Image 1 (cartoon, rainbow, N blue to C red):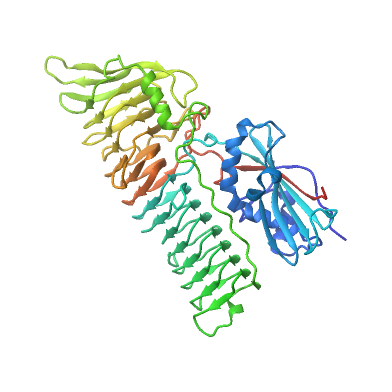
Image 2 (image 1 turned 180 degrees about the horizontal axis):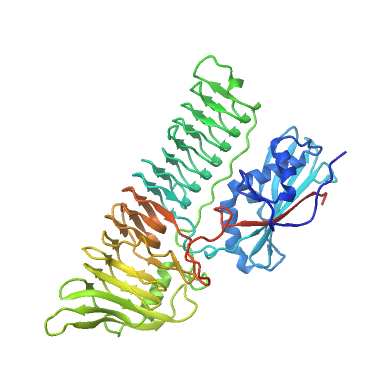
Length: 588
C-alpha cells in the first residue's frame, strides 16, 4: 500500500532545519520522508517521484540563472501570476533523461506571492517508452512545492550581487581567502584561482575554470574545468560543465560531477557523489574512485592498470546514458540598474554631470588634501574643508561647497560635493555628519602618503561617483569601520572609467591598505593587490586579486534597518530563503 503523502503548506517555525546538497532547507515535518527518498530507501511505486528528486537535486545548478530571471521580473508581475512557467520557459525549467522510459524532471512554474515571496513548483513525470505525454497523464506525476523569500538587502538585478564579478574574467592568486561568490558574465570569460586562493562560496564561469585551491560551494562552467588542488583541499558542492572535467590532483569532490564532455581522473581524486559524462569517464590513477553511480555516454576507461572498471564506482555503472548540463547563463555587463532600471551607469553619470551644479566652489578645480599648506580634511553634508597652515591664514577653509541634488540609491535629495581630480596625499580625510556624496569628474586618489587616510565616523556614509581612475593606497586602513550604517553601505564606489586594454587598472587597491567598499566599475579593470584586502564586493570589466589580501563579501544595503553586521540573514548563498514547503502527487 502506498504511504500516505502529507499535503498542505508547512511553515518553518521552530522546526529543525537541514541543509542538503541542493542548497535547500527542508522542514522537520517532511524531513524524515525526504531523507528516505534521497537515500534510496523509499520504494518508488511511481517513477515520476524520481523525477521530482532529480528536479530538487538539479535546482542547485539552476539556482543562479533562475534567481536572476525571477529577481528581474518580480517587480513587474502581478501577485499569484507565474513569473516563469513550463509553457513559456520550458528549456530553462526542464531536465530530462531516459530511465527505462522517459523520466521528466522539471520546474512546473514559479509564482509571485505577496511580501517578496515566490512559490516554486517542482515536478516529475514518468512516461514509458512509446507512450505520449497526452495519453491520459496517468503514467505518473509528482509535485513538490517550496515557498521562498527572495527579499534581501540587495536590489534585484542590482549593482552588487557577488563578491567578485568580472564581466570578461576573474583571476585570484597569492593566498588570500575569498568569502563569497565568484562569477563571470560574457561568453568565454574564465575564472582562474591559484596560489591558495580558496573560495568560500560558489564559482560560475562562462568559459574555462582552473583552480588549485578549495571551493566550498558549487562549480559551474561553460567550458573545461581543471581541478588541480592537492589532498589538503576539497570541492564542497556540485561540479557541472558543458565542457570536460579534469582532476589533475588529489583533492576530493564532495558532491556530484556532471560534464557534457569527458571526466578524467589523472590523479587520486575521489568523488563522493555521482559522475555523469557525455563523453568518457577515464581513470588514469588506480586510487581514484567514485562513491556513487557513474553514467557515461561513451563508456568508462581504465588506463592505469588491470583494475576492473566496476571497482572504481561505489554504485552502478550505466553506459550509453548521460544527464546533459544546460548552458551557463551570463548577463549584462552594464545592466540598467539606475533610475528605476532605466539607465546604465554611464547614462546615469552623464545625467549627474549635467544636473549637479558646477558653479559651487571647487566644482571645476583639482583638489589636493594633505599637501602643505593644506592639512587634514573634513567631508560632511556642508562640503569639503581643510586646515590651511599658511602663516597668515591658519584656519579651516572651504575647498568645495556642497549642493543638494537627486542622486542614485537615495530616495530623497542629498548633499553632493563636486570636484575634478581629488587627491588625499597625507594626513586624514574624515567623513562625518551623515550621508555624503562625492561626484569626482576626474581621478580619485586616496591615501598616497602617511597619516590616517580616509576615515568615516560612526553614523556616516560616503558614496562616490567617479569618472576617472581610482587608486586606493596604503594609508587607507578601514578594518574597524562597520560594513553598513543605518541600512546603507558605509562606503560605495561607482566608477564609469573605461579601460581600453588589459594592462590599465581603472580601479586599483594596493599596498597594505584594507579597503571597505562595494565597488561597481563595469567598464574598468579592477585590481586588488593589497595585503590588507577588501571587505565588500568588486564588479568590473575584469577583476584581479593578488598579494594575499582576504576578500570578504559584505552585502550591499540600500535602505532601512540599523544592523551594521553586514549579514543579510539568508539561509544559503543564493539569496533565497526557504520559508515553507508541501509534498504530494497529482495528475493535473
